[in-house]
Image (cartoon, rainbow, N blue to C red; front, side, top):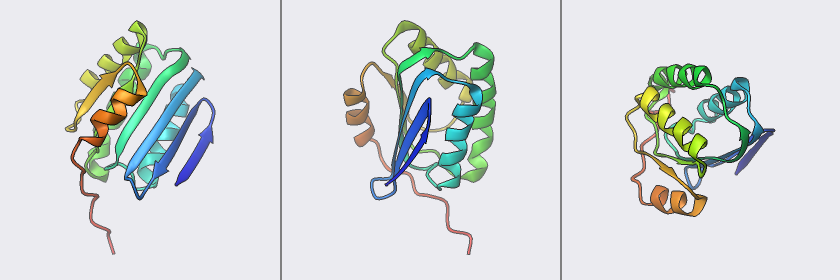
Length: 137
């Protein structure tokens, strides 16, 4: 399992479980979320199931960030198929931002918003796996 600690977005990638768990804490800049996304792609984990937990995020990104992130995500299918995404967003503002992201990203994958990580994980574990892209050798 690989762990990436770039406060305020930390994530772990479990290749055996084909699972990515990311936690955003405090004030999160656009560049930190982009670093996470780049880390997922460069680790060949785009097809893995993912939990993105914003429970401890204090300041939520402005709408412009969400539009930029969604545009970036729409370009990622060139790297392969997406695994299911569970967003943990217990607060009203965080849930609104999560819904905005899901509407703007327009990516073909299961995605759902939860109030706690346990429910998110239970749903995610029930999702079918996605095959990774073939290894270009």
